[in-house]
Amino acid sequence: MTPPARRLPAARLRSMLGAPDADRPAYAWLADGIRQLVANGRVMHGTALPSERDLVAAVGLSRTTVSRAYAELRDRGFASAKVGSGTVVRVPGGPASGGAEPLPIGARGLAADEGSIDLTCAAPAAPLGLADEYATALDQLPAYIGGMGYYPLGVPALREAIANHYSGRGLPTDPGQVIVTAGALAGIATVARAILGRGATVLAESPSYPNSVLSLRRQGVRMAPVPIGPDGTDLDVVGHALRATGAAAMLCLPDFHNPTGTLLGNAGRERWAHELQAAGTVGIVDETSAALWLDQAPDVLPMAAFGDRVFTVGSSSKSHWGGLRLGWIRAPRSEAAGVAQARMTLDLGVPLLEQLVLARLLERSSGLVPETRERLRANRDWLHAGLSRLPGWSIRRPAGGLSLWCNLPSASSTALAAETARHGVLLAPGSTFAVEDHGLERWIRVPYALPRDDLERALPVITSAWERIAR
Image 1 (spheres, rainbow, N blue to C red):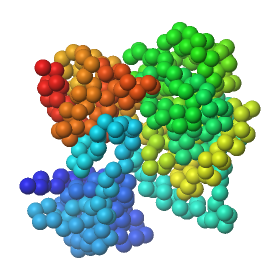
Image 2: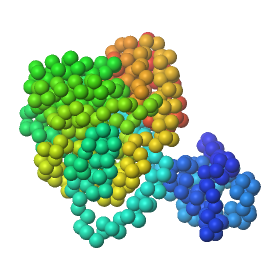
Image 3: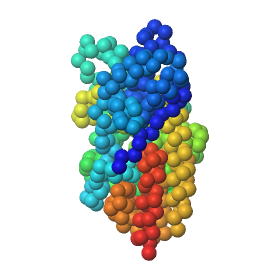
Image 4: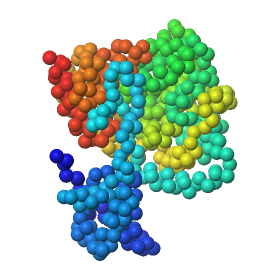
């Protein structure tokens, strides 16, 4: 039996709509206001709108006006009449399935069936107001339509916004040092193509983000692991590995490391950059998680502020929205031309409209919007408390990032992921994040970026699965 739709209280809808527009018919203001709330993700698909009688009292409009507004929503596909629930919100065509962040774990048999909860993905939903930013960017688009539309290094407005973002963080940057890419992985691939020959050795902390490791391997380099502990990067070990391997480059994640969630302070960044310089090794710093602080903004400089052999790769996927599919490279001045040439051997640019959207988003905020940060913080605390009750589990609560890196009392990560998958919850075992593609069986990553409803359904499944395999 289908559960009844959750009803949005009339008073709550009234406060979300804001002030009426005196220059428009009242029914049009009401209908368009609700449509915008749906488009911006503030009123979700399947939500029952207030009854016409309740909304009449809340907004001070006539019954005829409210009825006409609801009819307008139904005609445009943003609502439907449902017996027992009244008028129910719809996303035209229904919410699109899929769209989760892919990890290279398909060979292990994990596949997201309809209705499953995909905890292999650590990425937040789009921020409120994103649809409005697209609408504004469409107004800017005519200025570009007269040309051919190729901006292989990025539109000037976005390159300038990214440069200002770094300058504001204490790393003076010129727009000429910025190359826009189709996400951080494309940025890493571009840097590798520009500076690395086939067969070169690249160090990476293990665990690390698996897609970055795979991207580097596909460039023909040899990956070598450096262990990172639950408390963060061991710079003595890093220095020794740099000297022992003669690595041409090292992949560095000093900002809310994925998956461990650790954050490196300025002293550590300065030493790491010094170790790279002393070894003649190029640093490739993945800053995808740099803006994902949850408790307080960290007082740290970008790692490139401490060394001139550091390439910085950023992305909008975690801080703004994965659907933008935009990232960037901040290159040393002496290397920017070479990186630009390498960029154009991969493709000739990324979609223009999304670049205009991201430029506006960066002008407004370089990181998470307050509503998203508050939701992630609450989810982190709730999930940390729930998983910490499992016997023998040890979990450090990160100050930022999107997931918990859980230490298990036995080497059971793959078994746990297989067991939860049989009951509709997908997890990525620790070996997914190992640079050598094995080991880390005492660790499992559990993201908290999904809606709380999904986490509340997933936690009992994880708990019962652990009870079964721990017997």
